[in-house]
Image 1 (cartoon, one colour):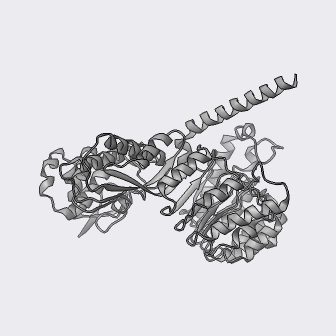
Image 2 (cartoon, rainbow, N blue to C red):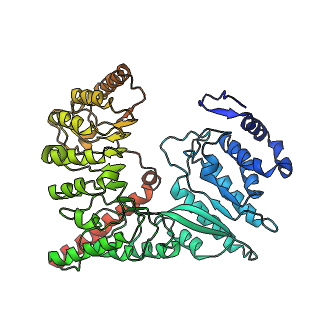
Image 3 (cartoon, rainbow, N blue to C red):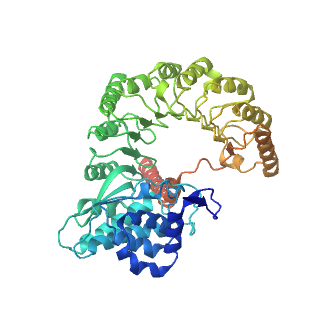
Length: 517
């Protein structure tokens, strides 16, 4: 039996769910948990998470009567409770979950719980939980690692350990505690299926990967302040990642090693070796190699892959026409769901090849990113023609292109014909900047746009969507770029690392100048 929910979130909750929410709203329910049927625990947990009843969440986990605790599945939609809470990375609730797991293994005789899967959360910009405070992937990693270390220090009697599956995000700031947690035993055992690394040196990265176990990893992202070159990438991939589905490499990951011979044959041999390692990853479906110089190398890199890619990020890779020709004719093109070709003058220099690529990808393509591609008003007609076959497209990102308000309106009108389109990221119209502003815009120019004109233009765009019957399309212009929850969470640490790198560079320069005197 169903009834409408008065909370206004648009979901229809069952009477069981409404009863569970009413029950967990009263703190006196806790002593009665011993008599609750085991199959009601998942329902009580989701109700407690929704209402942010931290003490009850902790108690539910301490007494969890089932063999598995699957956080993503519990917070996802269900017949009783259709609301999806997987984007609620609520700090209060997640801290209570981890403390509840700790209490569970400390109970005399332990419990039935053997696996706690804490993956499945989505980190988003706006938190809808009551406290409004998120615990991001880095924070969840540190919390879990510290809890594991505390239990290790307790010298508990050996029993059946509780395996905790987590998406780990390790940086210089939490490296030591994460390593201690992964190295030690204890009643809570961290197991990692998804690993993101930032601001680590190559030695630290390889050490953590050995602890995590490359054979188990499904997703690996090495980003930003991890300095790799092609030699280190080859060494990294040679560890073997047979189950890897997604791989992200940092900026300049395909640069030649400092000691490498400048002869092209030496560099080609290294790239061939990297491609061979990638070909051993028979489940690889997502590859991101943005900001690496790959001019004329895309075919050598991608052709050995045994399975077609679903997601490919080649942003700012200095691709040549030959690279795009290969991509348009490859088996990957017909399977791509996400494609990022930012930083390339596609429409002005390679229009026919770009059209061919989109035609091949049209039946599968869901997300297309073309930021800073030099798209101007004269290119809008060609762009709309190229996008026409992409009837499955859901998201289009065009930040950083010098388009006028009139061109953006024409473009958006044409995009309304794409039935599945849900979101478009448009650049600030060129009209809003001082005349003569050069693209890509430098930070001083970005701060000098006309806010009132911008608001008037965006209001016109919203009216255009309403007239076209496409109010469902979300149009946005993130002035500081797309939201990155991981980068936001570690911005202070990364800033400190950059300042330290600048200090070291200045000291090296000072020593060099003194030697010249």
